[in-house]
Length: 259
Image (cartoon, rainbow, N blue to C red; front, side, top):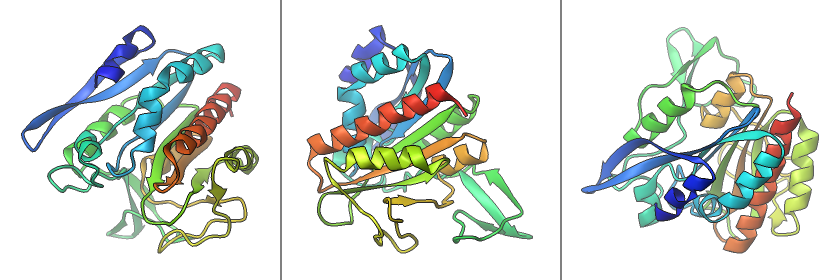
């Protein structure tokens, strides 16, 4: 919290909400840097995925400088689930599932789902209004702003063994392939790999999946470039920082370019 507040000379530091978990009050921060085109960065939905919040809190100065040089505005949510981050647990201290749960799909009259099977059609989507207080707070703040030019959600994978990286993406594939190639010098790109019950990466380590997440929300809002970046938690932290910064800089470049 001290580190984030100390960036007030580089960005507008706002508390968009406060939450109480286990008797401890936590501020929820948004860092805003003005610009002509906007990039939204989210991180820390899951507390046992620490690399994203640490990258954003320790390297924000260089991130802000890179964005300013390119006229890109930033809205950065560095640690969405602070009690989980502090405890090293996936969910918040109360055990609520702080997920990036933003959408519901109506796949048939009266049938609603949070995730779509691959190729599954739907009749409409709506903004979800439930979930734990941390999810409700960040969702309310994100959705009150206009859609950005690009959006990046930084996660980790606590289930797969070894050091590796992959990403869920929407938009043009060539820039994402280039980012994966750059990241490959720091961790193995998980190409053609089974990463969970629903998804296998393609030959570039990429997945396209409508899971009702914040990334899925930005897709539905017409944002042309959207990604959820994953590094395994067994990847050394400095390698995670390097990969996260490759994608942050890449997404700043995509925002600067526009659609």
